Image (cartoon, rainbow, N blue to C red; front, side):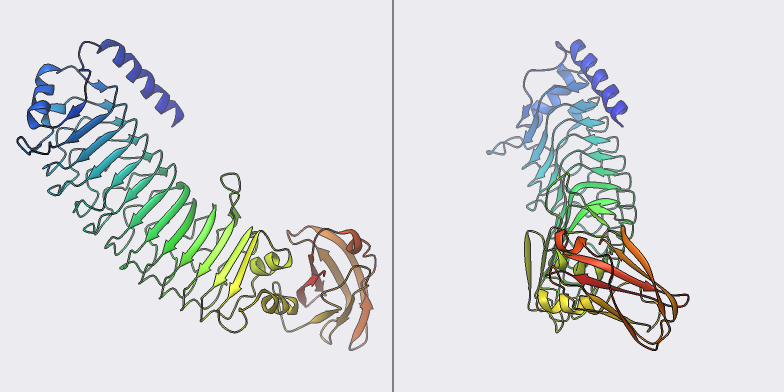
Length: 440
């Protein structure tokens, strides 16, 4: 893609050098006559090397009705603003392939279609469809658009479909969809990367996120989507800077987030999980066990009583910058409550075979012991691992009695360790059980 953009830039630069006498030195159009004259006076102007603003004058003496004067213009290196026009379509821009700046639609009350932009492939800045535009009902017209290098922001209450964006693959900053009547996100099925946030706000017909099956990188921020039940559609999402789910009254689970395993601190040092005021959310089982967060806000989820998952237990064992937990269901109301439940054991438990560690949590200088329950027998392997899965120590015990207690040997790193939690895994030929060992 870089080679494509470089080639395009070089071709545009060459074109600019040959059109100095073929393009005007003004690009603000307030009357239809100006646009008509542009096509007559500058028929060989293919690259406009500045901003273009199309806005009907306040006296409405010559309203802008069409853009036919721009036929043949294939590149605009600045921004393009279309506001307060009487346009119904965008025919006239049919040759346009590249916009170097932003493309903004504001208060075009008669615009019923984006037809005319079928050759547009790259927008170098933002694209904004404003809330004061009744707007077309779909995105047909943007059928070849591949990249928006900055924000893509659509706030169009009359839009019922994103069809027309099927070739969009990349958004360089945020994708914001707000106050829209979208029943699905179909149309975005080839979108791969949103560098910052996917913000879905008040999309009140949306029940899931199907249509985003190819999305691999984004920070999901979902606010006030009244019908949203789960996050299915995000199964391939692997990374992003935050997860924010707030004020979604019907959200029941995080299903769809199973593969989100990495917060991308290289973009912003956030790494925050925020689950706020989702009264039907019942469990966090979809959280990836390797998800290491920097902040945790878990509040107002009144049906949430199952918080003992590895990602949460690991965080509470070594809390990050910000922690807020409260007003959830029983079992998830305080960090201490959740952490105590974590110490009972989560993770790789194959049967009811068990063991326990005492004391746990353990103070520096203490020597914790393990008690093996009845089901373990014969040669029993004891492994101590870090929270990221690195093996720190391994030894074997011979168990013949029905119940046996042994001190954990060779554990000098407990006193000087900066970590506050480890994983203890016990196994014999038939059983495996895993628990957290916490340090005060």
